[in-house]
Length: 631
Ligand SMILES: O=C(O)c1ccc(O)c(O)c1
Ligand SMILES: [Mg+2]
Image 1 (cartoon, rainbow, N blue to C red):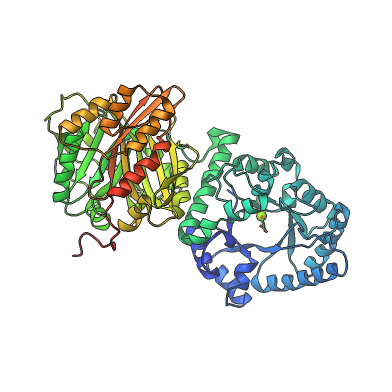
Image 2 (cartoon, rainbow, N blue to C red):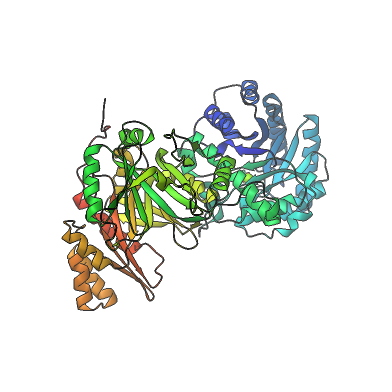
């Protein structure tokens, strides 16, 4: 793999914070952004030493703007400015200066004029023992395509002058990638990498605010890198991300994401060339949700058990050595953990009653763990009793765990064997059959981190992000689904502080599962049975049903049944979706029951504002967050 690097502009903090985060994440080098240096209180030699002490290479000093094609007397000033920066680079210990193409209205066009300027600058660079790389900005005044930048560099014909390629500028303009392959690799000084979501806006604003790490956006960065590899370029791959959330987020977390994105991109690019030569197992296919584990104290656990019973679950097992019970229905397994020590208890103390772990069924646990380790995901081990199974796990959202299980040939040990089966109620027909989806709420700034976490490890497809109106602000919602729909995860985050999603995070000390939806083959029968068992459902206003009638012209009888059972409805072509919500449990999480008819693939997004408003009416007033247990 090429050396890894990241530009300081990609992270929050002052220069020292940024450099520490970059080194801690394990990058080989760094592009020093001039602005990070100018605003830092430390002389160039000390900054240079700080960087080498962290074992980082200075890959580039940048950007030097508005250089080529200036008329006199501006041209003379520009060369003097460059000379000063070369001196500064020598003090810092930087060997490469990045020049981005001129945006000044005063600049003059002409490839030979630009080539001549760069040739002359090459002599000055040689005098100072440094090199210069020229990069086309997508919005450059005369040079805005890498092919023109390369032609200028070629004609400059100076051994101190090379080309800089940036995936964003190339892919944003939809420039063809094939011509990259014919540039000699040793004339490329640096390759910068960035992804971005597809947005319909001017390219400058898009670049300055919405870039993100490869794999977080929609651009074909692997195709770009594949073309670069064909040149024989062996220098650093440097992430250069201008992103509003990254500037505000945790430098440490974002730096780790950056390295993970490069690891996944290298794997993706290798697979484009020859899947057999990949160095790590492929993204893990998900086969289903094996179980969902709740951690809580005895008292709320009893209330949760009543709720599970009313939802049609039966207690199907008692753990052999721990205070852990299993509840089942159809293909769904829920685990209730009330242990007095260990991971689950810490989770309950920290977050209150809630989901502390998800277990996902994968084709090959060992391969999944190997890929997780390659991606630098955090693995987790916990002590187990004699003869009990250790289930391999990694850390997920909000410090929760993701366990991995795999289908086992008959007779092989499985996590089920840790439980003594209790058969009560096992023969009742299942009202609910599968986990339909799991929603996790998180800080808005973390959404791209968890998106990368999930999609780099698992074969999950991203569904476009939706903005959903909560009465207290917008909530961004990003579904991730596997090919057969057996695993659907939803990431929710909001920049507004009082939305249901934000309050979940702020009042419960961090991100986590806020809601779980189960599939029912017959939602009316399920809701009737649950109501008979004493459960009631989130109230939905009459206005909603009036609108449904107006929108779809539903049969009055059908509409009455929806209304009576508080069921929400959506339609997509011939496909239909019915959904109903429990009240919120312990002010933390809630359940949803859905029925999908005719292959409905969405999540009832049109109904989400109705649900959020209903929940807001029920929500307690905001209180100052405080841990459940203060001992
Ligand atoms: O947005 C800019 O000005 C800018 C500067 C330097 C770069 O390498 C780049 O890609 C963009
Ligand atoms: Mg760039």
